[in-house]
Length: 177
Image (cartoon, rainbow, N blue to C red; front, side, top):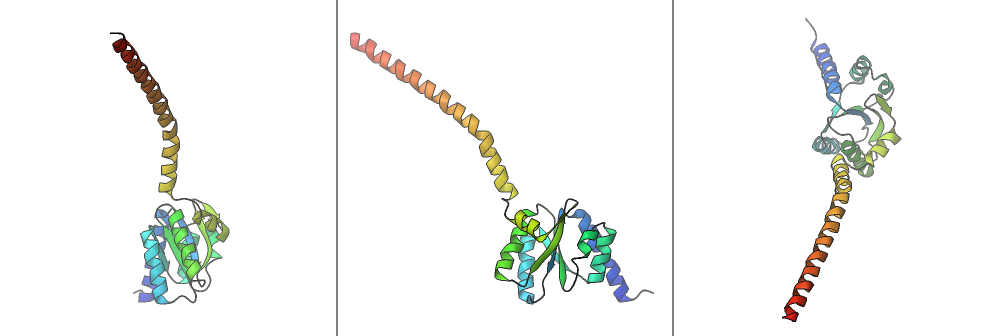
């Protein structure tokens, strides 16, 4: 019969591997010195941006990362660490992390992974400065809509000119009578 600690480690490792498969990005953070309410606040903010923070034993995290092929992240697992799993676009969670760091300097971002690419802290910071997917969509729609709007304005101007000319012609004909 297995010990409860062994069962917990195996379950945690399996959970990390499954979550890694479903994640678009992963960030490693160090939270040493953060209070429990601050950590809860961070978790809540991350959850709102479709990400979650998992704190697990370092040995379990290292083994799960190695087994998942993320060996580059293993070096970042030292001391009190957490893994941030991103389920959607990584811009919003990275913004949450850097906004949180402005108020709580104890939080440190160690590294991450995004679509088979290792990210250093500066890469994640650059990611946090990008506009969100929704903002990019709005900008794209504005760019695509611009030529159509101009075409409509030109055609409307020509129609307005034609109507003006016809009205003037009508006034001229009425004045002759």
